[in-house]
Length: 282
Image 1 (cartoon, rainbow, N blue to C red):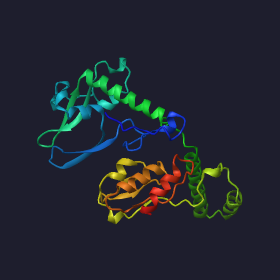
Image 2 (cartoon, rainbow, N blue to C red):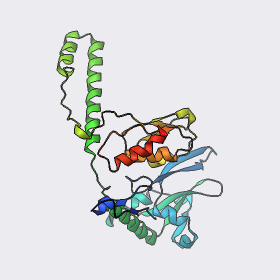
Image 3 (spheres, one colour):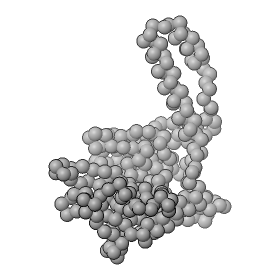
Image 4 (cartoon, rainbow, N blue to C red):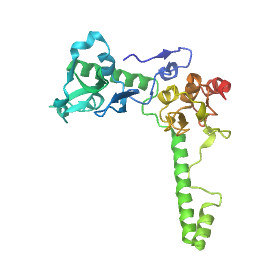
């Protein structure tokens, strides 16, 4: 509902240089997410990962109460569509459907809350405004060439490893020798990363046993961090986001167990400042 926008006129000559959206959760998403805990029909605790849309915000404000109505469970049907999915539909596709958000009642049971047309229009406006801000800040549809290169190299390495293991298992040593000659001679079809790659790259790491499940890292960079089965943070993809998000996560970590390592993309904006900020958490 209220994105955080920082404008520094001395940061550069263009709006993209001067606008900073750091501090907003889930920068690459339309909406951040949260975990809704509830009790199922057998009284067991369950949970769902859901987006925090404008409708979820408005439903928590008494002034918008007239725009929401709880739908009794016996009325639930396929014509009811989650609010964030409803916004993605064209006008003609919305015919006969009703947007809703999930919530819980006083007994912590799931409820569906129907949203008015006014809330839908406001949600569209908020989403459009957020996308416009990201466009001005250069965050919309940005293609990270270096990330694609690294992903390609990793996929090629995985395919090569699978091939070699298959050849070993089959006892086809002749083919194995040929495969090593073709693929292990020091040449590669993968494109070079160029000057933007960091030769001293050290990936982010977490002292997982020390994690207190504060939700900071998983909220700031959900593509990099996740919880394991013990509800403690782990790194699932060290290059799944920006180094800026890794540094922010380290700064927010209440247990001090997250160590940023070094950036893998030296072309990231304000990288020198980020490296300086990360030093105290290494």
